Length: 125
Image 1 (spheres, one colour):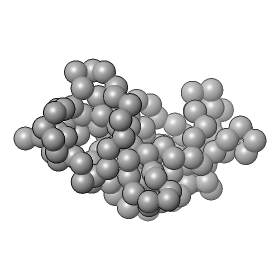
Image 2 (cartoon, rainbow, N blue to C red; image 1 turned 60 degrees about the vertical axis):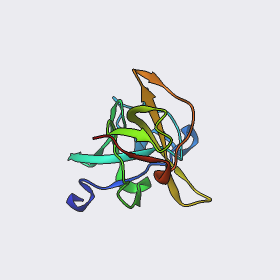
Image 3 (tube, helix red, strand yellow; image 1 turned 180 degrees about the horizontal axis):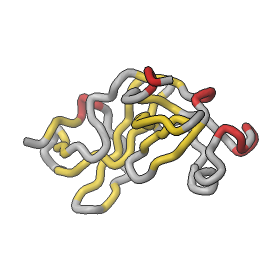
Image 4 (cartoon, rainbow, N blue to C red; image 1 turned 120 degrees about the horizontal axis):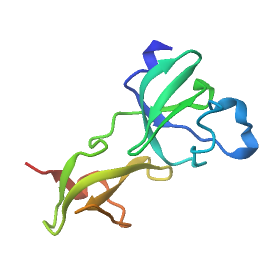
């Protein structure tokens, strides 16, 4: 299981899948979603620890679907290619049809609803 640490992936889980896949102390905070991208930051007993932009969850590795490493990560400082917005990555999702990452940004602490693809962003220096 150590090979999961520092990987990125999806954790497609819904209430119908049963609560035994999510740590009992984390299940109330875990929002069912099959497009949210997580970063595996560690292991605890039989669980892997997944990091989202705002929370950590302990889950059974059974449902974890690995992805490539995204170009941008949570809280990376970015600027949109049109130079209109400077902000940070606050959420990463996976677009199944296009097989690519989708990024949501926050600007001055306000989460924006527009989705950005990698080619629409660049690192803010």
